[in-house]
Length: 191
Image 1 (spheres, one colour):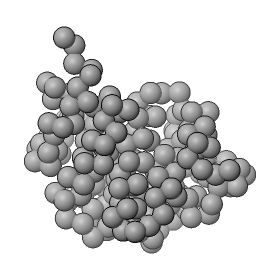
Image 2 (tube, one colour):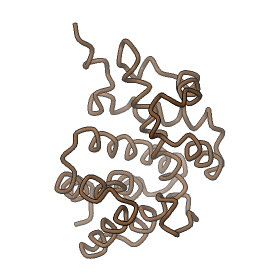
Image 3 (tube, one colour):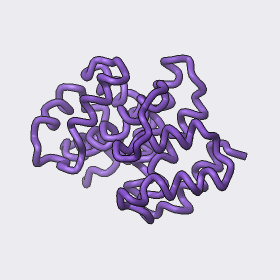
Image 4 (cartoon, helix red, strand yellow):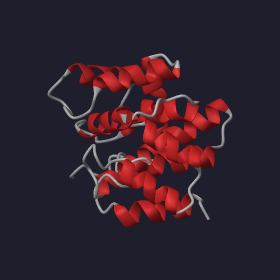
């Protein structure tokens, strides 16, 4: 079965890093929220978000990721639309983003990382205390979370046809819904 449990199993088979697993959960939450918003299949969109970087820990180079992962997905019978969306999230893959799913995955990927980083530098470490303005300020600080592509965040929202501040707010809200799973509920604050 290519369901959410199978996707989680595949992710954990290849990804040991807790932070990468949490990133996958963050992107899944954002894509599930967008699927509901657009009236799309939430399960397919969520699985795509969960699996988009499942091969990254073992195959991190541009020559390998997401190509090795896509071959694994194909061999294990995952739907072609999931495979294509995952390929399209890498600018260097040569696969153009055409569908709403592909555009949403690209738009949410880097942003989820920036939202996580912006939350973790807050004294409360609680995503409930984060808003779009805070994230926008962090975007301007090039030294902050410097591996996160601001250009991808901006172009991703534009390609999806969503105002950047609304997109940021939308993804914050999606991630708030699973804050405890992400460690973004303030529980990491040392008392």
